[in-house]
Length: 92
Picture 1 (tube, rainbow, N blue to C red):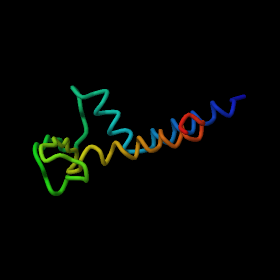
Picture 2: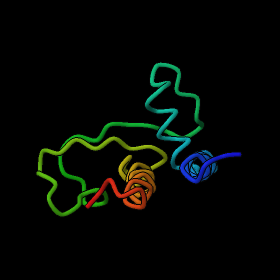
Picture 3: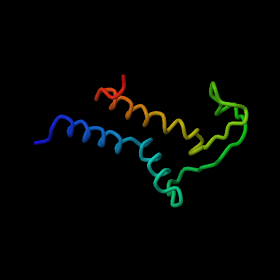
């Protein structure tokens, strides 16, 4: 029988693997040389009003996937990990 900790890890695994953001980030990280998504990718150098966020420098480089800043895919995934570790008591 699975422990509560194992159950939580299985839930996190299922949640992430059903999240299109996670799958895209995973593919970008693990398969950068063999990226297969049908989404366009590009690098945008310098400031871009559509992508700029508070705190970005004017010389910021943006990595764009499917017309969105890669951070738009990454931050929701990071949030899921943050919530998981917060529930585990690893984040004060």
